[in-house]
Length: 86
Length: 299
Image 1 (tube, rainbow over the protein chains, first blue to last red):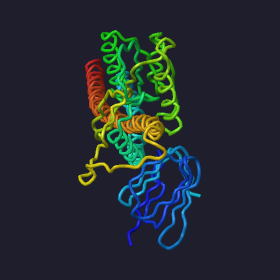
Image 2 (spheres, each protein chain N blue to C red):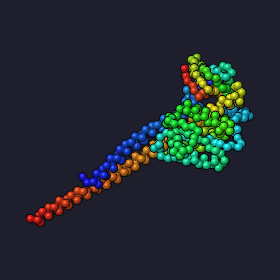
Image 3 (cartoon, each protein chain N blue to C red):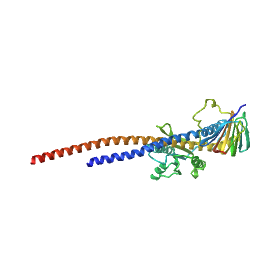
Image 4 (tube, chains in turn yellow, blue):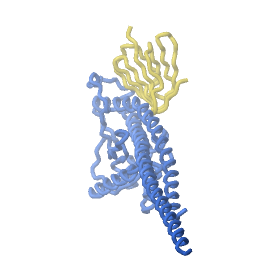
């Protein structure tokens, strides 16, 4: 099965990157879940958690402020001026 | 000991102490270059992602944004000057200030008034010494720039840009900063920040030439609205990081040549001191021989 290549970056460094099964983020319009094969998307994030579910079922939770999410060919980038892992 | 010899020895000692200091500074900045370069590298994923996103929105929607529209009748322009807080970096600061002066006269010749935003103690000093006014200053953080300062600068220039020209708003914003090219070269560069011309990321991936047709959420305008300030912030942050890396490289170069010069001075003065010592001995021998002769003939 296809997987998502996810990277979480903040202004001064890459916080986390790796492969994942699902990404859930909160945009200004509400929560959005992204699975492999999602259409290209560019959305503005509202302040909140970004949850990345790994293949092993483990979850990575990051706090992101002032950012956006871009999805393209199973590549997910969560870009925020401030972001940190919880 | 002869007076001349004492003077030489003093000079040698002073050159030696100076050399110790410059050598230490050289080593310190050598290690800081690596750290600064690491930070430039660490911030690349962010700026690359943001640049890609901005160019995606800009190419796939016909949204015109206030930050990207060229203005007519610009009467005032802002220049953001990035210098360092400390000197002892060779031509690092003077070349930036020279570049800024060149830009100023160019803008003036186009009939624009120039407003300055200064980053780094050296540029602030330059301006206060000449009693020239500046809009805002940021000092103290150029060795290790942080995102908060970049955001502050971005906010300040954005609000100046969005203000009405009658209230002192500006129609153009330029940045002058040293770009880190290599350990030996720092290139002063002038970049127009606003109105924005979205530039492609420096490394263009071959397979990524065509940008995908994005779905925007909530819509292209809102996305662009929130992306552009972040893009500007990232450009400013990048300029600050580049400038700090370049500063450390310039310091290292300057301190290396200072240490080499000190070495040369020490060698020269050692030669002179030896000569002085030898001629002193020769003179003493001559005096003793002469004295012995005089005593012998007096008998």
